[in-house]
Length: 304
Picture (spheres, helix red, strand yellow):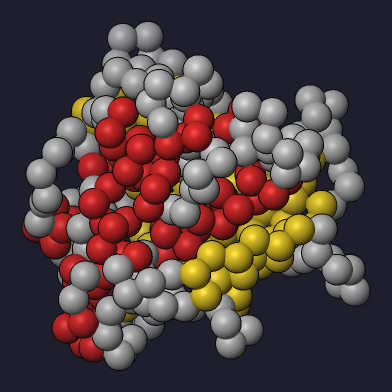
């Protein structure tokens, strides 16, 4: 008999996006004016940024703002108690890009496994795929984990430990990418469809012990993906195959984020090689750890 919540599969939900959504996403994660193929819809090489599909399970088909808490609370998993998503934070994310996203509407399907960590809380682990509604072809897969603070002790499985990907010791980074956030960074990013009040108003963060508003972990995650693709992948979406990171600590409005990037020197036959990274704030505190990507490295000179 399987553990409570393990392997539960949710019904597929339709998602949709327009060129405007793709442009908004690119602007919200810090893409630069010299990367017009992500920012200008009439560019001859116009492309969807490779991690964009990660936002679609939040957005679905909506073009209007939504009630984040109500939508999350509607999620019911057999054998798992009702969980209060007002006290949820991201754990880590990994995306595998199988094929570039087209522009028409598609369907998102997801399966879910949930485990208890005892008194500290509950980890919810999901796998979500963006799938062609007609052919069943899979464009991307995202493995996610989230932590629900103080909502454990319900008997769920403890789950396996995660694999770590530390940066190499004693070696200087091969590339560095810096982004300066503002007091409005989260307000722009949330327009992609992730309307969690934790990133818009101080009250939820105060209740959770963060002291106030924090920026989406997925903003930091996506901006690091952009930095790596820009610095080493020529800003070409075809040059990123996998990307993952763990959310190590909160990012606050106005923080300056520095991503240090290392090539691991283990290129595969298909030309992709492992890249590891860590992102820190202006005080040297790690905000993204366990960073790893599979990338075709061509340098920071865009060929588009």
